[in-house]
Length: 205
Ligand code: GRF
Image (cartoon, rainbow, N blue to C red; front, top):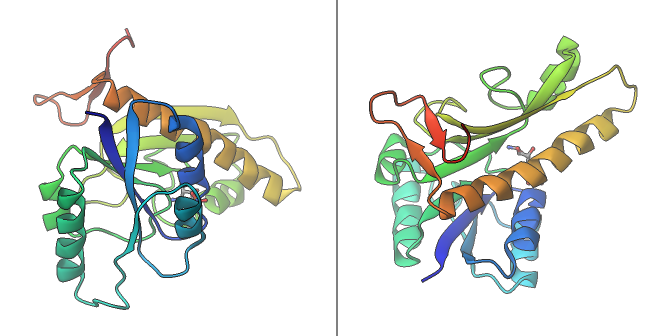
């Protein structure tokens, strides 16, 4: 039985593409791609890869709890082991988070806990940070506040080309997120019940 993931997107889906490319021919199956809005480019990427898609939008169901219940039902029907937020730009309700406790990860373009929330890359640039990075973390009920699984840091020298900086963050995301999914699927990641902030990765010391 392959390890089954669902990828949740809201827009471009470049992280989804990285997962599709990296996990092809692996023991990990992308069982479905869900978008929070119609017309997301990520849906096209999924369809091009022959992956089942669905849209659960607040435009169709403005009651967030009901929307998330329907989404959770879809994920259960698809027997998903792990929910991967890859550019999913909405908050999920506490009920949803509890239902999939320890089984949701998110990629965020900052060295958390610095710069949570929207616009993290621009905030880092505006702040003039010299070291930046990307985080993959488990999702809890806060905004980008869950236990950290992987981080990759890099120097951010002064640069006029903002789009090149953005691209660099995304390149790192595209490497880090598939690595995190592979580690979880291989059973190499565990949460410490005595210290819920700490994530243990087997083989990391
Ligand atoms: C990524 O930077 C992700 O970390 C952030 O939103 C962006 C989505 O990019 N949450 P994409 O849709 O994967 O191309």
